[in-house]
Amino acid sequence: MWSARVTHAEGKMFCPNCGSELPDDTKFCTQCGFDLSEARSRAGDAADALDDGAAASPVPPTSADAAEVPASGDGDHGGKPKGSVPKWLVVTAIVLAVVVAGLGVYAIATSTTGRGQTAAQKVVKKPKAKGKSGKSAGDAKANDSDKSDSDGAADKSNQTNGTSNTTNGSNDSGGGSATTSDSAYVVEAEHFRCTLPSYWRDKVDVVKVADGLVIYAKGYENASASYKGELAELYYMDGTEPDVAGDVGYAMMYSQAIGDHHVEVWAPNWPWLVADANANGSLDSFGVSTQGLRALIDLSTGGKIGYDQVLQLGEDDEQVSMACYNFISNHAWDVQAVEE
Image 1 (tube, rainbow, N blue to C red):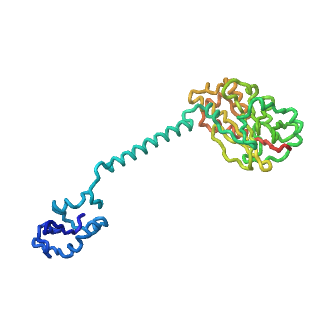
Image 2: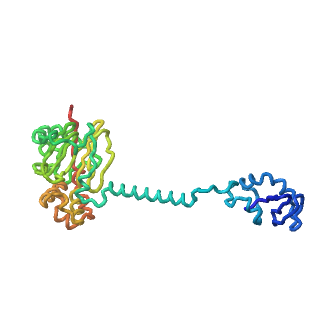
Image 3: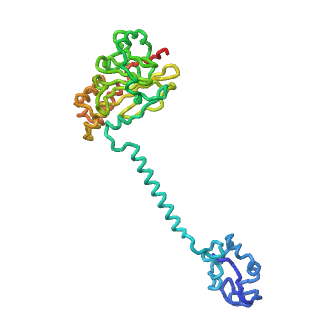
Protein backbone atom coordinates (compact mmCIF):
# COMPACT_ATOMS: atom_id res chain seq x y z
CA MET A 1 0.00 0.00 0.00
CA TRP A 2 1.17 3.55 -0.73
CA SER A 3 1.65 6.26 1.95
CA ALA A 4 0.26 9.80 1.64
CA ARG A 5 3.53 11.27 0.49
CA VAL A 6 4.28 14.62 -1.17
CA THR A 7 6.84 14.27 -3.98
CA HIS A 8 9.04 17.24 -4.89
CA ALA A 9 10.82 17.90 -8.18
CA GLU A 10 12.58 21.26 -8.95
CA GLY A 11 10.12 23.60 -7.13
CA LYS A 12 7.15 21.52 -8.01
CA MET A 13 5.23 18.87 -6.18
CA PHE A 14 2.87 16.06 -7.03
CA CYS A 15 -0.44 15.41 -5.33
CA PRO A 16 -0.22 12.05 -3.54
CA ASN A 17 -3.92 11.56 -4.08
CA CYS A 18 -4.35 12.10 -7.83
CA GLY A 19 -0.74 12.60 -9.02
CA SER A 20 -1.32 16.07 -10.46
CA GLU A 21 1.74 18.36 -10.85
CA LEU A 22 1.35 21.47 -8.64
CA PRO A 23 3.42 24.47 -7.50
CA ASP A 24 5.52 23.74 -4.44
CA ASP A 25 3.59 26.08 -2.12
CA THR A 26 0.11 24.80 -3.03
CA LYS A 27 -2.03 23.97 0.03
CA PHE A 28 -4.88 22.21 -1.74
CA CYS A 29 -4.77 20.20 -4.96
CA THR A 30 -6.45 22.16 -7.73
CA GLN A 31 -7.59 18.93 -9.35
CA CYS A 32 -9.01 16.89 -6.48
CA GLY A 33 -9.01 19.30 -3.49
CA PHE A 34 -6.65 17.10 -1.44
CA ASP A 35 -5.20 18.88 1.66
CA LEU A 36 -1.45 19.05 0.97
CA SER A 37 -0.38 20.83 4.17
CA GLU A 38 -0.61 17.75 6.41
CA ALA A 39 1.02 15.55 3.79
CA ARG A 40 3.85 18.11 3.38
CA SER A 41 4.59 17.96 7.13
CA ARG A 42 5.14 14.24 6.88
CA ALA A 43 7.27 14.35 3.75
CA GLY A 44 10.54 14.40 5.71
CA ASP A 45 9.90 11.06 7.44
CA ALA A 46 8.13 9.28 4.59
CA ALA A 47 10.77 6.55 4.49
CA ASP A 48 10.26 5.71 8.17
CA ALA A 49 6.51 5.75 7.73
CA LEU A 50 6.90 3.26 4.89
CA ASP A 51 9.01 0.91 7.07
CA ASP A 52 6.63 1.14 10.02
CA GLY A 53 3.58 0.32 7.94
CA ALA A 54 1.99 3.81 8.03
CA ALA A 55 -1.57 4.37 6.84
CA ALA A 56 -1.77 4.15 3.09
CA SER A 57 -3.81 5.52 0.26
CA PRO A 58 -5.56 3.00 -1.98
CA VAL A 59 -4.66 5.03 -5.07
CA PRO A 60 -1.36 3.96 -6.68
CA PRO A 61 1.31 6.64 -7.33
CA THR A 62 2.29 8.07 -10.62
CA SER A 63 5.32 6.83 -12.48
CA ALA A 64 7.43 9.59 -10.94
CA ASP A 65 6.44 8.61 -7.41
CA ALA A 66 6.94 4.93 -8.15
CA ALA A 67 10.50 5.62 -9.18
CA GLU A 68 11.28 6.79 -5.63
CA VAL A 69 9.48 4.02 -3.73
CA PRO A 70 11.17 0.56 -3.65
CA ALA A 71 9.10 -1.96 -5.55
CA SER A 72 9.68 -4.57 -2.85
CA GLY A 73 8.11 -2.42 -0.12
CA ASP A 74 10.62 -3.76 2.44
CA GLY A 75 12.04 -0.39 3.44
CA ASP A 76 15.33 -0.90 1.61
CA HIS A 77 15.62 2.42 -0.21
CA GLY A 78 18.90 1.37 -1.76
CA GLY A 79 17.01 -1.09 -3.94
CA LYS A 80 17.60 -4.82 -4.26
CA PRO A 81 21.34 -5.58 -4.20
CA LYS A 82 22.69 -7.07 -7.34
CA GLY A 83 23.57 -10.77 -7.24
CA SER A 84 21.31 -11.62 -4.26
CA VAL A 85 19.75 -15.12 -4.17
CA PRO A 86 15.98 -15.22 -4.82
CA LYS A 87 13.94 -16.30 -1.81
CA TRP A 88 12.16 -19.00 -3.76
CA LEU A 89 15.49 -20.60 -4.57
CA VAL A 90 16.50 -20.66 -0.89
CA VAL A 91 13.17 -22.22 0.10
CA THR A 92 13.48 -24.85 -2.62
CA ALA A 93 16.99 -25.78 -1.44
CA ILE A 94 15.77 -26.18 2.15
CA VAL A 95 12.87 -28.41 1.09
CA LEU A 96 15.18 -30.62 -0.97
CA ALA A 97 17.59 -30.95 1.96
CA VAL A 98 14.77 -32.05 4.27
CA VAL A 99 13.56 -34.64 1.75
CA VAL A 100 17.05 -36.09 1.27
CA ALA A 101 17.61 -36.27 5.04
CA GLY A 102 14.27 -38.01 5.51
CA LEU A 103 15.10 -40.63 2.90
CA GLY A 104 18.42 -41.28 4.63
CA VAL A 105 16.78 -41.78 8.03
CA TYR A 106 14.20 -44.14 6.52
CA ALA A 107 16.94 -46.23 4.88
CA ILE A 108 18.86 -46.53 8.16
CA ALA A 109 15.73 -47.42 10.13
CA THR A 110 14.76 -50.10 7.62
CA SER A 111 18.20 -51.69 7.74
CA THR A 112 18.18 -51.92 11.55
CA THR A 113 14.64 -53.10 12.24
CA GLY A 114 15.13 -56.44 10.53
CA ARG A 115 12.18 -56.21 8.16
CA GLY A 116 11.90 -59.23 5.94
CA GLN A 117 13.83 -61.49 8.29
CA THR A 118 13.03 -65.17 8.53
CA ALA A 119 11.73 -66.63 11.78
CA ALA A 120 15.16 -68.10 12.50
CA GLN A 121 16.84 -64.71 12.06
CA LYS A 122 14.36 -63.13 14.45
CA VAL A 123 15.46 -65.60 17.12
CA VAL A 124 19.19 -65.36 16.41
CA LYS A 125 19.09 -61.56 16.74
CA LYS A 126 17.16 -61.54 20.01
CA PRO A 127 18.38 -59.10 22.68
CA LYS A 128 20.62 -60.49 25.39
CA ALA A 129 19.81 -59.52 28.95
CA LYS A 130 22.70 -58.41 31.15
CA GLY A 131 23.40 -60.09 34.45
CA LYS A 132 25.30 -59.13 37.59
CA SER A 133 28.69 -59.22 35.88
CA GLY A 134 27.50 -57.16 32.92
CA LYS A 135 28.09 -60.05 30.50
CA SER A 136 25.36 -61.69 28.47
CA ALA A 137 24.77 -65.41 28.53
CA GLY A 138 25.16 -65.54 24.77
CA ASP A 139 28.58 -63.89 24.97
CA ALA A 140 30.13 -66.50 27.26
CA LYS A 141 33.04 -68.35 25.64
CA ALA A 142 32.77 -72.08 25.13
CA ASN A 143 35.75 -72.81 27.35
CA ASP A 144 34.18 -70.76 30.16
CA SER A 145 30.97 -72.81 30.22
CA ASP A 146 30.36 -76.31 31.52
CA LYS A 147 27.54 -78.79 31.85
CA SER A 148 25.43 -78.35 34.96
CA ASP A 149 25.60 -81.42 37.19
CA SER A 150 21.89 -82.00 37.36
CA ASP A 151 22.29 -85.39 39.05
CA GLY A 152 24.37 -83.88 41.84
CA ALA A 153 22.11 -80.85 42.09
CA ALA A 154 19.12 -83.14 42.47
CA ASP A 155 20.54 -84.24 45.83
CA LYS A 156 19.79 -80.70 47.02
CA SER A 157 16.14 -81.01 46.13
CA ASN A 158 15.13 -81.04 49.79
CA GLN A 159 16.17 -77.36 49.79
CA THR A 160 13.88 -76.35 46.92
CA ASN A 161 10.39 -76.88 48.29
CA GLY A 162 9.59 -73.21 49.04
CA THR A 163 6.73 -71.27 47.50
CA SER A 164 7.50 -69.76 44.10
CA ASN A 165 7.15 -65.99 43.72
CA THR A 166 6.33 -65.42 40.07
CA THR A 167 4.66 -62.84 37.91
CA ASN A 168 3.15 -65.50 35.67
CA GLY A 169 1.54 -68.07 37.98
CA SER A 170 2.83 -70.92 40.11
CA ASN A 171 1.23 -74.15 38.90
CA ASP A 172 2.82 -76.54 36.41
CA SER A 173 0.14 -77.23 33.83
CA GLY A 174 1.90 -79.70 31.56
CA GLY A 175 5.56 -80.40 32.22
CA GLY A 176 5.20 -82.30 35.46
CA SER A 177 5.30 -80.81 38.92
CA ALA A 178 8.66 -79.94 40.48
CA THR A 179 7.35 -79.29 43.97
CA THR A 180 8.29 -82.56 45.66
CA SER A 181 11.71 -83.98 46.37
CA ASP A 182 11.20 -87.16 44.36
CA SER A 183 10.11 -85.34 41.20
CA ALA A 184 12.27 -82.22 41.39
CA TYR A 185 14.71 -81.67 38.53
CA VAL A 186 17.09 -79.17 40.14
CA VAL A 187 19.95 -77.43 38.32
CA GLU A 188 22.40 -74.86 39.62
CA ALA A 189 24.04 -71.75 38.16
CA GLU A 190 26.68 -69.49 39.66
CA HIS A 191 24.25 -67.33 41.62
CA PHE A 192 21.06 -69.38 41.81
CA ARG A 193 19.50 -72.82 41.57
CA CYS A 194 16.11 -73.64 40.11
CA THR A 195 13.80 -76.51 39.24
CA LEU A 196 13.28 -77.48 35.60
CA PRO A 197 10.09 -79.12 34.32
CA SER A 198 10.24 -82.87 34.93
CA TYR A 199 9.08 -83.28 31.31
CA TRP A 200 12.60 -82.21 30.32
CA ARG A 201 14.41 -84.82 32.41
CA ASP A 202 16.87 -86.80 30.25
CA LYS A 203 15.71 -84.80 27.19
CA VAL A 204 17.78 -81.63 27.56
CA ASP A 205 21.35 -80.43 28.03
CA VAL A 206 21.91 -77.73 30.68
CA VAL A 207 24.93 -75.47 30.14
CA LYS A 208 26.30 -72.99 32.68
CA VAL A 209 27.22 -69.60 31.24
CA ALA A 210 28.05 -66.21 32.71
CA ASP A 211 25.28 -65.28 35.13
CA GLY A 212 22.88 -67.96 34.03
CA LEU A 213 21.96 -71.18 32.27
CA VAL A 214 21.09 -72.16 28.71
CA ILE A 215 18.81 -75.15 28.14
CA TYR A 216 19.20 -77.05 24.84
CA ALA A 217 17.25 -79.92 23.38
CA LYS A 218 19.47 -82.93 24.08
CA GLY A 219 22.27 -83.32 21.55
CA TYR A 220 21.95 -79.81 20.07
CA GLU A 221 24.47 -77.99 22.25
CA ASN A 222 27.32 -78.66 19.82
CA ALA A 223 25.23 -78.48 16.65
CA SER A 224 26.93 -76.88 13.65
CA ALA A 225 23.79 -74.94 12.72
CA SER A 226 23.78 -71.19 13.23
CA TYR A 227 20.97 -71.68 15.72
CA LYS A 228 21.37 -74.60 18.10
CA GLY A 229 17.84 -75.18 19.28
CA GLU A 230 17.72 -73.43 22.63
CA LEU A 231 14.68 -74.17 24.76
CA ALA A 232 15.25 -71.54 27.43
CA GLU A 233 17.79 -69.10 28.85
CA LEU A 234 17.88 -68.08 32.51
CA TYR A 235 19.51 -64.78 33.48
CA TYR A 236 20.56 -63.46 36.89
CA MET A 237 19.64 -59.77 36.82
CA ASP A 238 20.10 -56.66 38.96
CA GLY A 239 16.99 -55.30 40.66
CA THR A 240 13.79 -57.10 41.51
CA GLU A 241 11.67 -56.31 38.45
CA PRO A 242 12.21 -57.07 34.74
CA ASP A 243 12.58 -54.20 32.27
CA VAL A 244 11.45 -55.78 28.99
CA ALA A 245 9.19 -58.64 27.96
CA GLY A 246 10.18 -59.52 24.36
CA ASP A 247 7.72 -60.37 21.61
CA VAL A 248 5.68 -63.28 20.25
CA GLY A 249 8.76 -65.05 18.85
CA TYR A 250 11.03 -64.72 21.88
CA ALA A 251 9.82 -63.55 25.26
CA MET A 252 10.41 -63.46 28.99
CA MET A 253 8.03 -66.11 30.30
CA TYR A 254 8.85 -66.12 34.02
CA SER A 255 10.50 -63.80 36.54
CA GLN A 256 11.27 -64.36 40.22
CA ALA A 257 12.94 -62.04 42.71
CA ILE A 258 15.71 -63.34 44.97
CA GLY A 259 17.00 -60.71 47.38
CA ASP A 260 17.95 -57.54 45.51
CA HIS A 261 18.23 -59.48 42.22
CA HIS A 262 15.86 -61.51 40.11
CA VAL A 263 16.02 -64.37 37.60
CA GLU A 264 14.34 -64.10 34.21
CA VAL A 265 13.40 -67.11 32.07
CA TRP A 266 13.44 -66.30 28.34
CA ALA A 267 12.38 -68.79 25.67
CA PRO A 268 11.81 -69.01 21.92
CA ASN A 269 8.18 -69.65 21.06
CA TRP A 270 8.95 -72.68 18.90
CA PRO A 271 5.39 -73.55 17.79
CA TRP A 272 4.80 -70.02 16.54
CA LEU A 273 8.27 -69.70 14.98
CA VAL A 274 7.86 -72.94 13.03
CA ALA A 275 4.33 -72.04 11.90
CA ASP A 276 5.50 -68.58 10.80
CA ALA A 277 8.50 -70.00 8.92
CA ASN A 278 6.28 -72.58 7.23
CA ALA A 279 3.88 -69.85 6.07
CA ASN A 280 6.83 -67.97 4.56
CA GLY A 281 8.45 -71.04 3.02
CA SER A 282 11.56 -70.68 5.20
CA LEU A 283 11.59 -73.77 7.43
CA ASP A 284 15.14 -74.54 6.29
CA SER A 285 16.36 -71.21 7.68
CA PHE A 286 16.66 -72.66 11.20
CA GLY A 287 19.35 -75.12 10.14
CA VAL A 288 17.54 -77.74 12.23
CA SER A 289 16.13 -80.98 10.83
CA THR A 290 12.41 -81.76 10.86
CA GLN A 291 13.10 -84.27 13.62
CA GLY A 292 14.82 -81.53 15.61
CA LEU A 293 11.92 -79.12 15.13
CA ARG A 294 9.53 -81.83 16.31
CA ALA A 295 11.59 -82.22 19.49
CA LEU A 296 11.77 -78.46 20.10
CA ILE A 297 8.01 -78.01 19.74
CA ASP A 298 7.31 -81.01 21.98
CA LEU A 299 9.73 -79.92 24.73
CA SER A 300 8.80 -76.23 24.65
CA THR A 301 5.11 -77.03 25.18
CA GLY A 302 5.36 -80.03 27.50
CA GLY A 303 3.84 -82.22 24.80
CA LYS A 304 0.71 -80.09 24.50
CA ILE A 305 0.99 -79.63 20.74
CA GLY A 306 2.91 -81.38 17.97
CA TYR A 307 4.79 -80.40 14.81
CA ASP A 308 2.11 -81.57 12.35
CA GLN A 309 -0.64 -79.81 14.28
CA VAL A 310 1.37 -76.58 14.30
CA LEU A 311 1.73 -76.64 10.51
CA GLN A 312 -1.96 -77.38 10.10
CA LEU A 313 -3.25 -74.65 12.44
CA GLY A 314 -0.83 -71.88 11.41
CA GLU A 315 0.78 -69.03 13.31
CA ASP A 316 -2.49 -67.13 13.89
CA ASP A 317 -4.03 -69.92 15.95
CA GLU A 318 -4.14 -69.18 19.69
CA GLN A 319 -3.04 -72.68 20.66
CA VAL A 320 0.04 -72.34 18.45
CA SER A 321 0.99 -68.92 19.79
CA MET A 322 0.28 -69.65 23.48
CA ALA A 323 1.19 -73.32 24.11
CA CYS A 324 4.86 -72.59 24.85
CA TYR A 325 4.09 -69.60 27.06
CA ASN A 326 1.47 -71.47 29.05
CA PHE A 327 3.81 -74.40 29.72
CA ILE A 328 6.90 -72.40 30.72
CA SER A 329 5.22 -69.53 32.58
CA ASN A 330 3.04 -71.84 34.68
CA HIS A 331 5.91 -74.09 35.75
CA ALA A 332 7.13 -73.58 39.34
CA TRP A 333 10.80 -72.75 38.72
CA ASP A 334 11.35 -72.33 42.46
CA VAL A 335 14.41 -70.09 42.05
CA GLN A 336 16.66 -69.81 45.11
CA ALA A 337 19.88 -67.91 45.72
CA VAL A 338 23.16 -69.81 46.01
CA GLU A 339 25.38 -68.72 48.88
CA GLU A 340 28.59 -67.20 47.56
